[in-house]
Amino acid sequence: MSIDIAQEINVQDELILDAQATDVLFLEARTANSWADGEISEQTLQAIYALTRMAPTAMNTQPLRISWIRSAEARARLVAHMSEGNQAKTLTAPMVAVLSYDTDWHELMPTTAPHAAGMIPTFAANHALRQGMAANNAHIQAGFFIMAARAAGLAAGPMGGFDASGIDAEFNSGTQRKAFLVVNLGRPNGIVDRDRLHRLEFDAATQTL
Image 1 (cartoon, one colour):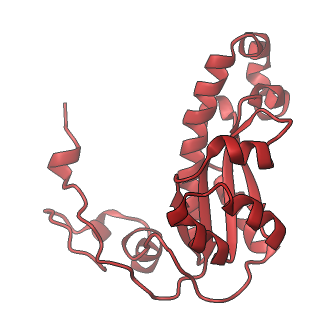
Image 2 (cartoon, rainbow, N blue to C red):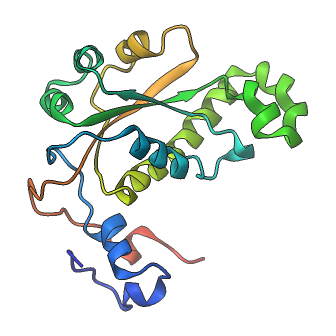
């Protein structure tokens, strides 16, 4: 394991994952700012989504929408809306994903949640409710997305430093999709920018009631 964790248990003893999987998904994984050379195939992107879509969402709503930014033209359009500190690494990442949530998720309920399709008129009449549910559940899916990328052997660099309204105008025009996260993706190159920062201990972050 790459870090010391102050605890009274051996984490691996409590897991059904083997040690290699634990390291790849959690303990050795790092947020990436640079990557090894090599294009990410369409098949790899499809595999990442196949895992991402298994995230739990309220009533199986699945509000996450992903825009894969591969072409140089699309990359330039995206970088124009990134904060200065995120521009260079977004230009050089082998793949970039713009994660958005769709506030019109209720329109797909006959497919995603036929058992609850009777609630469509209620959701159609309440945009604030739909937006809140979309944001909450898409963030859950985003966590699965990052873990799915790691499971595919990639490093992820999630970023919140961008002009969301600008990205929406650029990539989500004509839809009810709202960008909330941009994630750079690529194979790890072994470069570590800095030592891993401290993680909160069990007693500091949890309580048992």
